[in-house]
Length: 411
Image (cartoon, rainbow, N blue to C red; front, side):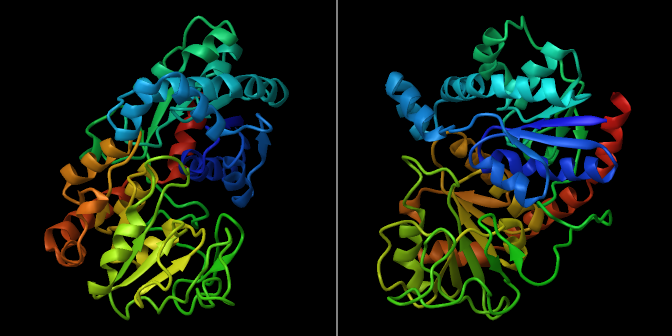
């Protein structure tokens, strides 16, 4: 069977698709990923065949043009209150730029099945055009059927497809306890590159692991790629960020602070807020891809690193503070780590609310973060118990290998 995976050209969109692509390849099927820009890196890191369907693609350029043309919707998006209006405009345009390349790739590859994420509706359009089944692979906390519906118009019109049939199947990676019951095939969320393991846990290769920019970081001991001082003359991280050595896990509580892989308005401020109160927190604090403009020197308990695989970092943490991306939310839940989510643009305010209602974390603005809040995040028994329940629930879901066998049966 030939399976074409289609993802929007963003890291956070493609990463959840990789475990199923790897499972299908292990089962002997031919797999090809169609995407562009930053998302190409993830496929190549997983050693999966990838094709660039939109050379020169710039998400930032599309976002800027779309928001300038629709300033009121842009304002609502930045506040996280835009609903599906902004995402429909933005990803409608994204898919209009992707669909020709996806169609040309499908003409050459001749897939028997197309797997796409909700905001890569170009995959569904091309599947409909070719008359092959499409599978929607959920990768966020919104209802994917709604996202597909609001983004499909431009690609449908471009290829003169009247409408989309229902998907042959839907793959669900978010637990029902988090998002409610949704129809589809439940699948365990696994980190990219995890060893096949059907016992309810995942295993990373021992020793240093490769991050998405190619450097190595070993979080179990003195970090191989996080060495050097963040002072003049020190070493730099993969993206040019200064890095400082991180003490071994377990020495004292560890909090990671992460931000979106997509830079843009409304995405900053979390790390500055944490650094401002860090001296009063009895914990080691790791800033992943630190924001620009942080004070120098940093407090003595604050450490920095460049790009790392968050799924390998999560099990070493006692808590995580982040921007509300769906991948980080689900990664923290899969590791049983309490989280503090700072609401932001787009779906991040929605995701922050989902986390708070789940009982596995809190949502608050960056300006509300205090040292006392971080101590409570580390010590709150209820948060830790609830996060642990989510970890067990996610681990109990079917392995991607099982889902791959179910998909093979529908073709």
